[in-house]
Image (tube, rainbow, N blue to C red):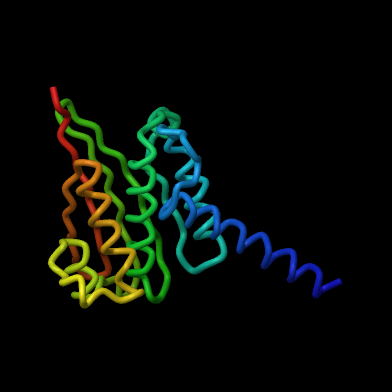
Length: 174
């Protein structure tokens, strides 16, 4: 009975992680071009649920129900993945969406003891890493940099003691 329970739990966790990675890195949702931010929240909740990192979703309920381009959800998921990896001892990943008259930004903050992004991760995020130095560990950061460019965002990385913030901003074209 205990073994079946463990197998069931492991299977559910693997399924959640697979769904997260399919949307974050793949072509999940098929030809759907827009997704509600709420779907991103659900994927992040499931992805982080069993670890030492908690999700602090600070996007208003009204904004969460808004549908955005699928690429924006991919961008947000990848930002949260990078932020969670900056928390070696656990902590919280906070997600905020900020709307202004002329710009839209998403801010993902990792809070926790010893929160830090390694220099090579920051280089990959800033597209300063030569392709030949790319490793499997750096691939998500490099991919995030590609998403930022593809979807017309700019990315800033801020680090303070116990705090790492990734902010993706796009200006509205009028």
